[in-house]
Length: 609
Image 1 (tube, rainbow, N blue to C red):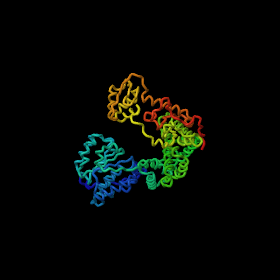
Image 2: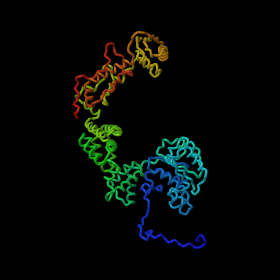
Image 3: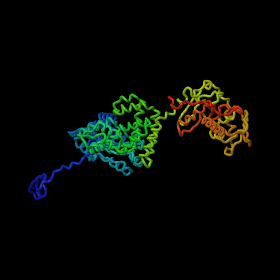
């Protein structure tokens, strides 16, 4: 090559490796930037994607049959491969093969100009846009304008919109027409973690793929392959911890593995190092704590938490681990076949199975509810450790308290009482009756005659008239129940004293309803006499009587003593009508109250097996 004046330039001497300014030797360094594992081992082919077999199979078939949609919607939790899949689709659409003659393929070559440019994120026809920051209608108009032009280099121009749910309503509306009928050289690929926030009008124009959360076993296998490629030894227990902490996200797990390798002190990454890095409690420690709680051993439980706190574990995190363990134990208890599965670690198969055999589902459910409530307390408490310890102490103290159902069965065992709280008068032929007290229930089976008892005559009393209004005129029924006092009732004649809140047309409305329903003309007279209490007041008084009688019964007293702080919620009796009164009005002077077991009945020993 000639120089500026046509002469041949002198060849430049190659730089002397290590030659300094004064002839001294400088150290040679290769400035190679480090790439984190999540980027270095990012999948570049469909077969590299793990845990997404259904989507991969569908896309492969679409390319082989040349039935490629013009718009894709990829949804799933973070780190499962949404954007990675979008880039693989872009390469598959634009790969031209090593010879430059290839067409769209499900197995892009990775070496042609289009493949290498897309892999390097510098292809002019593959446009990635972060909808979280560029979400206005003007940004959508830029896309619409760019759609008009054909690709500069590739076969297909691909628009990848990440976090598409962040687009404004106006931006979505601006894209609708283009998205429905794009030019043949345009493909849209949307990715989102919040599919419910995407308008249905957009979803209906896309082919949707739901990328599932990757299982811990698949993640552990992936991380093991990466560690092998990096020539790093990772203990299997440590790998399991990382896979569990990744929570279904390959990217999160690779980031954690990167961090664990960076802090490795010995020949391999150990479970203790990962536990310390994640701020987790050791799995065996969580099992020890659960066993102490199940035994009601407060001292041991607090000793365990003291050791965990000394090692830097957050007690709120320990409660979260306990929640996870209770869920796992409940599954093992409910479905014993899960113990034979290979997906469970050894600790879950051995110690977990033993705990599941000891703890019943009601006990586990109670622990679950208390832990969830405790987690809320920990988050709002000024001292997280103190709040977590209070939760654990409560769990230990209720460990030996039987569930309400077991307690009632003990108290109503043979020799306790003659019957299990018959709440209705014997002469009423009552059906099944129950009393609720802090979740406990005692009941007896319905008597046969209750099933065949004839219904009360229609409109035989004032309550029948009030019940007739229910469902036909709800407003009238409410006033008849709460705003009307009965003065006199006789066939065809009703004398009432309405309260001031009752409507003025109550009498003609009631007369019209009775005429329509019974075919008989009724006389509705208004009076100033005092009359009876309203139906609502009578029901409230009867309920108060039942509650007082129940509260004095020995069995109920035993239940309240067994469950400190429990209260009688409501006394239910199927012999009562919807107003809480006997279905058949009592004779004059007959007490309107339930007939409980004899007050001198002795309850069973609460701790008796």
